[in-house]
Length: 196
Image (cartoon, rainbow, N blue to C red; front, side):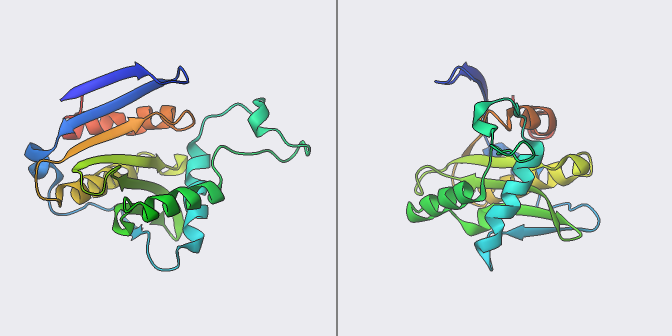
């Protein structure tokens, strides 16, 4: 297992956890624990609303400076946010066209019909067993409720359902999500699943 910390091309710290998951099948288990009154959804059915749900979750946990020119608007009561539904929809469409997107590998957790967490498992090459977990986020009011653990379990269970020696990377390189992921998800990955 390797823990890497490096500077990306933009100078931002990039934390990457990598591990061989072959020996971790027992840790993940066969039953997913879902917090009370929560439901699991995937990227299926009427998907037109789903980019908006992802955007709501990601923008709630994003850390960004309102003084940053990227988030300015002529209306002082309106400002841009880091994630936009159209960008999420475009990324999903591009992944679908490239064969790298599996709708059953995009997970939402809802609480009383409100989206409170999400994550997506992708592969750069659809024939590879190298997986990445992206969009890993839980809204602030749900942190500590078990949603984080459920998301990690769902992603790992999906990955481990593939035959062979799979590898996984949880890349915390998005400048707006990095702090949230390091505080909320890195401890779970380290303590419960042996990531370093």
